[in-house]
Amino acid sequence: MTLISDGGDAPIPSLSGTISPDEVNMDLTMCGLLVERAEELTQLYADHGNWNDVKNIWFDERLSNRSTRGSSQKIFRVLTSRFKNAPTTLPNPSLLPQVFEQCETTRDKAQILYLYLVTDDTLVRYVVTEYSNRLVSEEPKPLDFSNETLLNILNSLTYSDGSSFDYAESTTERWCEGIRSVMREVGVLEGQQSVTGGTPSVGTVPLLVAMDYSYETGDEEWIASPRGFLYLFQPENRWEELFDRAASTSAWEYLELHGDLDLRPTEKPYSWISRGGVS
View (tube, rainbow, N blue to C red):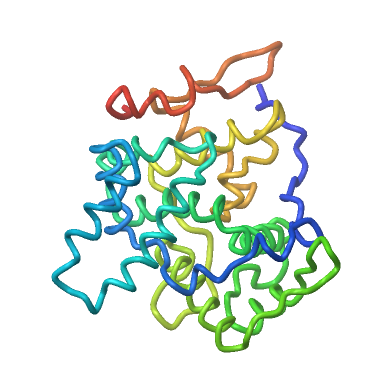
């Protein structure tokens, strides 16, 4: 039996030429994934149910240190943007504390938060998409995050109005540092000085989030282009292994259809969160 798929490479369409300049920002220069602070914010949101209360508590706890007030405001704005703008194809931010409880490592949590970053930050999504397509195309050193390669990719961005990417050199270089920091946290880059990376290993919990996100984002042919795997730079020759790992849990199962295999959630996507985990 074979898994239902068209068997072909299916890279994500480039965002170049499709986005307007006002969709792009340099928020990544202010903060990366900040796993511990993101965990704190989502726990507060789960406890209180609205972002106004979260904001008041967040800043009340920081009043004693005025020097960090401005920094905290920026971090709060950027991090909460990722959660407030999260698509329904990702877990509701109020569920993230339950998700994080099931993670085995900080990297697991970072890979989950990374999906919120990619879906919220258009510039990050553009760059991640370009790298994903380089990997699919089997280009030499597809995950080279040096300034030279990053700048080439950024400078290739054309907006929907015909204008081009245009930020100050110093700001752009800080942004490049920011994307490398994110890539270190999710396991693409190893070590503080490395700029060339590889495909990261994916823990069980981020695997299930990436699976459910791919299923919710795609159409009936989602399995030929699993968006979560592509964002996490998983090459096609690893997909079958990842599908099998997901199907070995209680969250996903293989179904036989006319001699072929289809892969589906055992219940609704993300229902495993409310069940208290996977086995």
